[in-house]
Structures are given as C-alpha cells and as structure tokens.
Length: 102
Image (cartoon, rainbow, N blue to C red; front, side, top):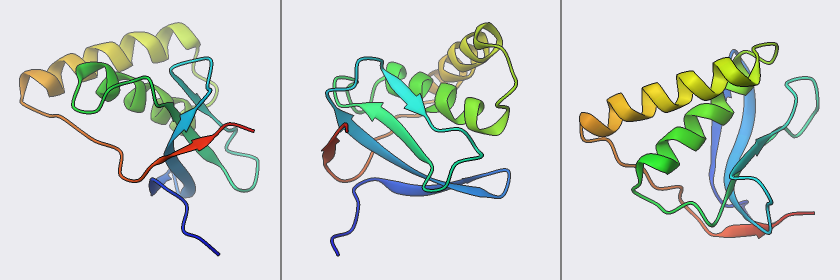
C-alpha cells in the first residue's frame, strides 16, 4: 500500500491526515473529530511558504481542536495567528503531492 501524501497530526489526542488536495472548492476542509480516517485537506491552489497557507492550516486545525467553535471565531483566530507567525518569519510547506478529492 502506498504511503499517503502529507503528514499525520494529533489534535486533542485524535489523529488526522493533513495533505494537499486538488479539485477542492474551498481553501481547506476538515473532517469531524467523530469520524474514522479523519482528514484535513488543504487546496493545492494555496501556495507553499505563504501567510495564506499558515492561515488555512491554522483555521482547519482550530476546527479539529474546537469543533463547536463558530466559523467567525475560527476565521478571526486563524487570521490573527497567521499574521503573528508570519511576522516571526514562519513559512510552511506541506510535504508530498496532492490527492484528487473524492
């Protein structure tokens, strides 16, 4: 069996596969913490090394951490944290290729 692209991340004791996805309509998407084989999908349109990628990854991880938090709160926190990290010089890349969204 081929290894899936991306990385495994743990949020509040639960694992997700974080990877790039092509044909994703949104910039990012996350599965409910209650499903098996949880995934965090980041659109392949979001460029590596950008503040936007920081924001989208933070945003989707916040959903995984605090599923009941409002979209508005997650959006504001994601933007604010990404700006801080970018000012500190943070830049990230998601390893591996992108998968087709099914």
